[in-house]
Length: 87
Image (cartoon, rainbow, N blue to C red; front, side):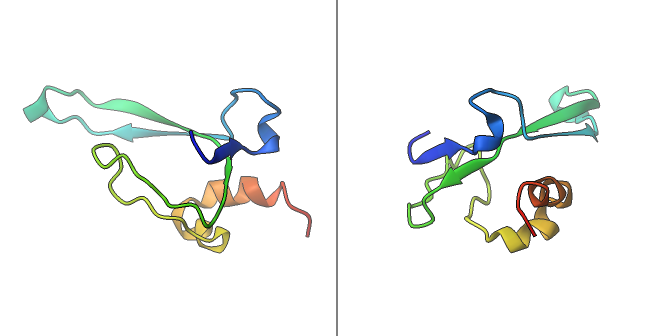
């Protein structure tokens, strides 16, 4: 991805920073059974002044957020990130 780089935590590998697994109810009208969904989350570094360009057909609410907002958005992610930073 242009303008993004993996956080050094990844050490050049492809291991996700966080794996969030959760149940998703089925959608009978679409022929989709209930299933377990896995979100593989990676930690990226980006230039905060770079424009955010979302793939609109895949992303519904893309926005740069301050790290302080992560507790409301992804509490487990905040716990993991807090282990990376001193203090």
